[in-house]
Image (cartoon, rainbow, N blue to C red; front, side, top):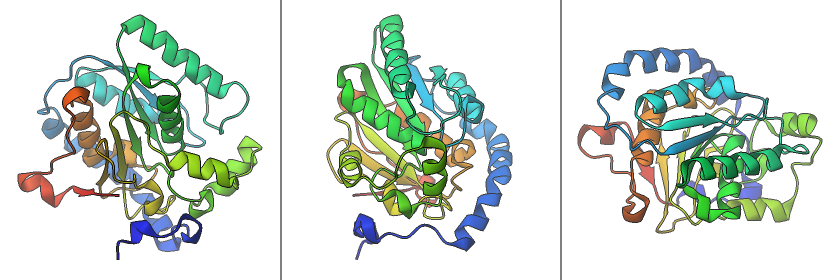
Length: 257
């Protein structure tokens, strides 16, 4: 049986061993540096704008490596400019909406949204609110398909956001994907988020890509960076799911919902 179908309220947070594996994040950064020549051979993008959202408790500095990489591939990248991500506190969501509107007016084209962990929730929900302004959504280790308590961050979320992580109606709403091409990049060895929480239900415009990565290092992981750049290069009018052909099949494992 596909354990990604486990009922959301039955999922458990990653255990102690997986949490210990989060210590590999510095090695992922080192691997990214070593893989720079390989990553540099990827096709150059079309220059369209990309807005990047950080994870819970993190700020724009955490996404700098990811944004610099995408900028080097030819995209016009932007940070979210809302300080540390402490949850949807007053003014945060309005600030995200205003920034998206500003970028859309500036570039006169749709914006791609990339969100790491909780930042992916913002990306998905913004895309649902203003579909005419969003080209695609890519999330990294984002828990949109399960109960928040299937993560090891829910207590911290409640502490810093002042909100409850137990809202059944919201949990069900978050599972619904945007209407634009939507990619979830996840890791079964994620030490913060139970991986089934990051699985899109199967639809013609959704996909899931498994990489070997830690949660806190996913935005630095060379395989995740490759997948993000590959997805951004897709023409949304002729979108196809990620194809791990040839030797790449040893590194990537696309997963249906």
